[in-house]
Amino acid sequence: MKTFTHLDSDNQPSMVDVSEKAITKRTAIAQSIVVLTDEIMANFQDGDLKTKKGSVIQTAIIAGTMGAKKTSDLIPLCHPLGLDSCKFSTEIAGNEVIITCICSLTAKTGVEMEALTGASIAALTIYDMCKAFSHDIIIKETKLISKTGGKSDYKL
Image (cartoon, rainbow, N blue to C red):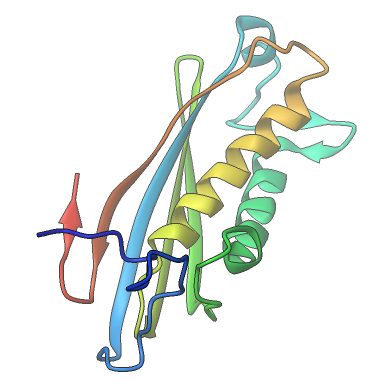
């Protein structure tokens, strides 16, 4: 029977005890999709948009990396992790910016939340940098694509 991992035997919030877990290489891939308006897309050149605040895509990648590294500060019961790697790719498909975040480390706990946080923060940064054009921006979805390492793997 499945149970919520962040509740102790008294049903109180608790960080998962990973002291007995094996150290393994763990990787997680997450994705966020931002839907921009035609007006915003018309300003993209060579896969990026330059604004007074700087390059939208490059700034989003930096912000996403910072967010992934700060996940345990944002999500109360996440373990603080020293990421070995945090990489991003972006793709423009019509009016969508598809952000993919890949996080990895060798540790006792996984990096799904770091990858999801990185992708989310990158998407929010795109929203922030483009909102002067329009507030009709949609962050359509954020999802885990895959994870490896630990007791179980996952692939969407």
